[in-house]
Structure formats: C-alpha cells, structure tokens
Amino acid sequence: MEDDIVLRLDRATAEDLYVALYEAGEHIAAGAAITPPTAEEVERLGTLLRDLGHALGRRCSPYCDHL
Image 1 (cartoon, one colour):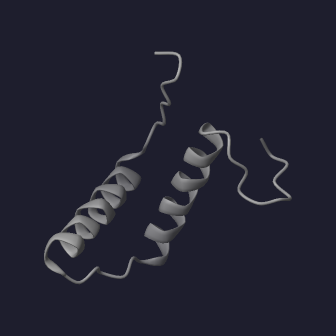
Image 2: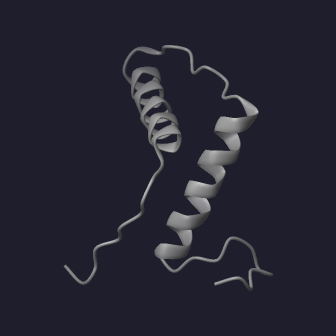
C-alpha cells in the first residue's frame, strides 16, 4: 500500500467530481451533452486536479515551487 494516494475531499468537491465523471461517461457512451460547470465547480475541481497532480509527483507548471 505504499504506492497508494489518498486525497481528502469535502462534500462539494466530491459531488463535483462525481458529476464530472458521470457526465463524461454518459457523453462517451451515448453522446449526451456535458453541462458547463459553474465558476465554483471549476475552482474546486482545479484545486483537486492540482493536488492529485502533486500527489503523483507532477508539477503544475515549470515554475511550480510550492511542493
């Protein structure tokens, strides 16, 4: 389990992630439209992706120095 990555999500971010993954799956499976996210959802999901990238050892930009 040393390669496990654990991120804690607040409920709103978890809901945003669920909706994004569900809608992407429906879009792939049946061509359903993907609802544009709100500014708040974009902010939460952007933070989640940054944190996940850092947990995977990736830098968010060539100038990333906050790791």
